[in-house]
Figure 1 (cartoon, each protein chain N blue to C red):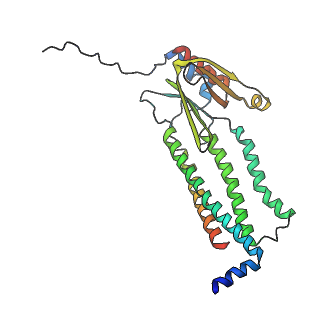
Figure 2 (spheres, rainbow over the protein chains, first blue to last red):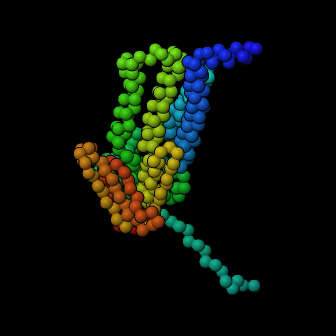
Figure 3 (cartoon, chains in turn blue, orange):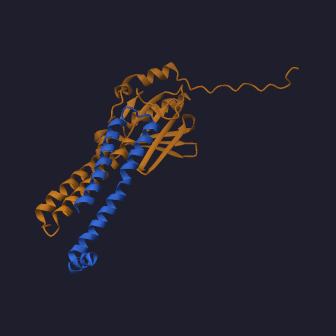
Length: 82
Length: 212
């Protein structure tokens, strides 16, 4: 019975359905997007090895890790507040 | 029983020793002015310290390290600034009140995340796009984008022709351009794109090539 009210509540408000769809799209997009910072980290590591930039790639690695953390936080935030 | 056949010991491969005359030529004058110390944003370094590459031989010395001129980053840098300013103007000029606040906030976060991604990717492409000249070979590392890398190397003996090209207002003003190295190897041409001091680089390459 409770489920039925939940569904009917959504059907009566088309706006809610729209925002639910947008939320799902945002969350899926951000989840897929998490792959990119990981890829960047792997590439920096690979190039560090190939070119021996052992001193110079440290700032890059710090930025890439921060980037990954921000991307994870954005995903969690979208999951919680939307 | 004496050995009938004894295989000759293989001579160990030694590095091409650069003659003192060329050594002096390379060390002297303008080449020295490029600086030996390799910094985070260096675009050219002569005999850089703190640099090595994966399959570098023990007797192999790096003579030139170069990457595209810093100014080549200007286009994407301006675009990133423009993209960062878009939401500020959009929120002032357009009415987004029909979008719930939480959606607006996450949307804005995604916009800046994508802008940062674009800028960071462009920077990495510039940062890792390097050319290294050693006393044995030329190493060209190209990454057209973050998902793809292409490393080309050719021995100095296979160089056939070296040309330096500086065309355009900005390139003439800031003294940067392309160096094209024609080779007899499987890769017909190695291109040092938008590198600083292309004429001097081609001079050094010519000197090394003549020596060999």
